[in-house]
Image (cartoon, rainbow, N blue to C red):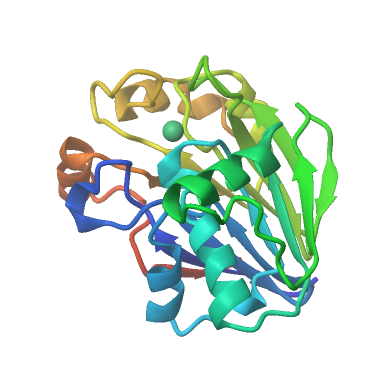
Length: 247
Ligand SMILES: [Zn+2]
């Protein structure tokens, strides 16, 4: 087994709390590079870390909210018009992800909805608890509880023999126990401290269920202002923009 490197490019919530960038985690192993979620700030975030957007083999989208997938059109436009990408790209997400990307492209860059990239793009759709290959990684999606308008998933990502679990956005659901079972790392959203916006997790709820989680390490992310202040005061294990971990 070789090491897997994670770079937390964006650890903020939808509202830019703490000045943090939107959700995006870069995973690199000997097998390739992948992004878990792709918020609108993805290109700036990659370039800040001197990472080449063309090196990304797969984009794994937990759900079709703008702060998690809104960067896909920017990455595609850059790859097609500016970066001369030739490397294949896998875009994996909830059912309808290809259509959602086309619609987002057309809204953000009118007329580009039918963009035919000069490089191969393969779309993969999540099915609850069905493991699937997505470029360099293998992913088992677990449906979580976040929106009644679009299916939302936590992702259990296997890369180079390591297991990395990502909650995506969700309120508490027992699916998180299975999602993160025995994982080397569980990156879990924690929008609030004692309460959170609807369909999100707060820290006290997560603490109540902590003993049921068997992950080796639990790392908090997607924190709102109240949670950011508490996380620092309490010295909680939390992600921040630019954090690099080797697993
Ligand atoms: Zn969301």
